[in-house]
Amino acid sequence: MEIKPACIRLEASTLCQLNCRSCPTAKGEVSKRIGAGYLKFENFRKVVIENSWICEIELSNWGEIFLNPDLLKIMKYACQKNVILRADNGVNLNTVNDGVLEGLVKYKLASMCCSIDGASQKSYEIYRRGGNFERVIDNIRKLNYYKSKYKSEFPALTWQFIAFAHNEDEIQTAKAMAKELKMNFFLKLSFGTLYTEEEFSPVRNMDLVRKESEEGAASRKEYREKSGKEYGGDRCKLLWLQPQINFDGRVLGCCVNYWDDYGNVYVDGVVGVLNNERMNYAREMLMGNVGCREDIPCTKCGFYKIRKENREWIRVEDVERDIRRESRFRNMVKRKLITIGAMNFVRRGKSLLRKFRI
Image (tube, rainbow, N blue to C red):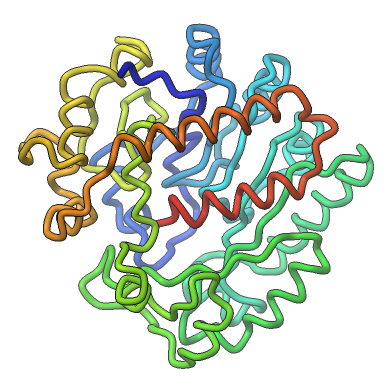
C-alpha cells in the first residue's frame, strides 16, 4: 500500500540548550550524524503546500523547538492553513519569549508535553543540567495567562516526569503542582541502559513508582516482564503512521533513528521518499518478511534487535487499524478545533505518549 499519512513528524530544531544526562543530543551524537540546526519557515511552507493531505505535524523530537527563530511564523502559517501542530514528544520550556508563548495560544498549538523531572530546582537540575525550574514554571503560568486572555483551552499541557532515585520523593508534589497549573501529569519510566551502558539514578522506591506508573511497572525491564512487550514498542509503527523527518528534510522514519536517513523530502518529495525502495524494505524488515540489511537504519537500533530476537513483528492489520482510528480522530479535530474540548487532546496525548515514548 502507498504510504501517505495524514500526520508527519517534522523536527523544528535539533539544537538544545540543556545538557541532559543520557540524551544523545547532549552527547553530540545527534549533531554528528543528522546535523545541528532548525526548520526554516520556507521549508515548512514547502511541505505544507506540496502535501495538502497532511493535516497534522509533530514538531518536537531531539531538540528544543523554542530555539527555532522561525517558530512563530511556522505556527501562524499552520493556523492559516488549518494544519494541526503538536509538541508532544517534549519541550524543556527554559528559553522562550512572551511573544512565542502568546503565539502558542493565538495560533492554536493543539498540545504540548513539558519535560519537568522534579518539583524543585535541586532535583530538576540533576538530570536537566543547565535548566531552571522556576523559569519553566513561570513560563507555564504565562502560558496559562494567555490561554485565559484568549479564552482558549489550547495548547493542552502535559507535565512529563521521568522517575529517578533523586526525584521519586517529589512525584506527589509534582502531581499537585501539575493540577494547580491545569496540566495532565504523566510519569515516564527512566531510560535504563537505552542510551548508556550504565543506568543513571535507578529508582529505589519501586512500590511508589509502580503505583504511580500507568503501566504498573517501576522499570522498563519490569514492564517487559509483566506485559511481554517492549516499553513504547509501537514506535516502529511510525514508519507507517507518523514518519519522522529531520529539520533539513532527511527522512529518519521514526523518532529513535539518528544514524542515517532514507532520502530527502525537499528534493524527492514526501510521498517519493516515504515509498522508496529503502523505506519499503525497512517496513518489510519490521514485519519480519525480509532479513536485516546494513544500509537500513533499523539494523543499528536496539529495539529492532529485540523485535528480531523475540520475533515480535509488526502486523499489517494492526497498522491499518491504527491508521483508520487516527484518521477518524484527525477529521474530527480538523472540523472542530475551535470548539473541541482540550481534554480530548490530553487523553489522546496520553495515548500517544504510551505508544511512542522513548
